[in-house]
Image (cartoon, rainbow, N blue to C red; front, side):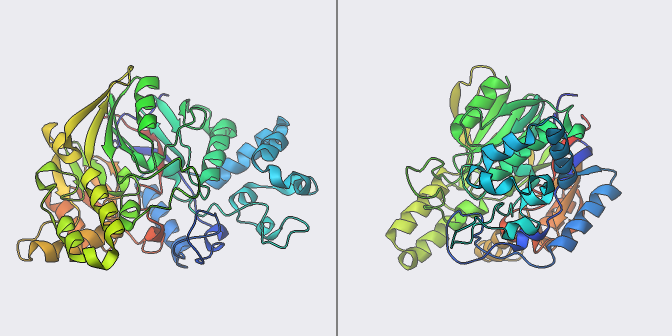
Length: 435
């Protein structure tokens, strides 16, 4: 068993994480990247929505593996080999003396921040300092690893609020019995590079699309091309600073960074020769004249010159293609944007929000395109070529997919998408059929 050579082959086996109590153990109090802080609170329907989502996967014949079960098995195996304590103390050194008294009771939900130990705080501290912080975004399992044609790539998160997801993910793939056949071919942490799984899309057996410059470093895409000996097409996203000298990587973020969080937030392959993507910003012909630029000029005086300049720069820099050659990592600017690149390879582009013949361009963009992007319309999961799961309520996108010959299954996920992820984010495929 090697890996996955296409993002649209029939989905055979995948990992999911059923969100538990950890998603409710956050507060919307301040900005920052502390794991207990969040920009928004998630709704109470998240549990039920996720169960229904998994039901759809299983009804389509997908073998579903639950991350909590895999993590529990990994803990048991690591304990049996007498290495669990060492691993635990390495990654939770600040509470080593606290853990010894109840280490035998630590389970998968403890590490996730979903059991009673969350409210166990460091002795003598006046601060609320849980022993295990909530891995609130863990149900977006796609982000801590991605399967490629060469094997598994493990992520490394630059932000404090997600760092432990990568730690737990690596532990699971190292110790869970059911995952031992899946070979790790690249570990971003060991390479001291920042990379997130949502930025990695398998175009074919020889090519990866990788979103770069926002949460995945350009150097990480280059390292993938060298280490995996695979062609990597880097797609520039709104640039952020993965290595701030001080403060948080989110300090200079805008809502554009959040909407373009990962490559799979704005683009996904849906059929053998069809791609779903947001219009304008990812294609060259409209790079200077498009609704986004017009909106920015119109709100310029309301957001201030510095914010305006930052947004204009982010829009201008987004979507451009950089190729990294397999084996050498040699970098070449292609002088085009990703949708132009895919069209040249024979792909038909389907737009988020669809296309309207009755509404004016600006009206359609604001009320359909941008709104549906916010509700993860681009973040679809291919079950097989030409059949996808789409977030319910994105009517324009759904109609456009159907008109282009793509079958759609809708999933209720209005609470699950609040933290900027959709069906593609919630599934980590580990086996797909080759085309």
